[in-house]
Amino acid sequence: MSTNIADVGDANFTTEVLRSQQPVLVDFWAEWCGPCRTLGPVVEEIADEYRDVTRVLKLNVDQNPSAVERYRVQAIPTLILFQNGEEKERLVGAARKAVIARAIDAHINHDTH
Image (cartoon, rainbow, N blue to C red; front, side, top):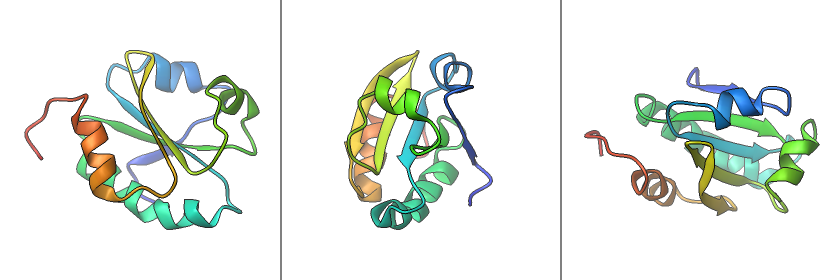
């Protein structure tokens, strides 16, 4: 896994995601989910390329039911971009890198893309 991706869970979601000073992309996933495994390397590339402007975190849906319920995650993989404690974008399914990048770019200003 990329060194730019950490795990987040129910216990630290508020601190790590909702109170973050920078946008946070949360990857809701599970080990048994084939599309999640397919999306993994793409999320790692996004984490590396956007490391200066966006945090990328992974949340295992099987281990963190509160966040799953709170954000009504009904299918995985689901990527949710949070900014200033609010959900700004949601992508469901194994999205292409360009689609994820556009979703992030729509909410942040930076010079790398």
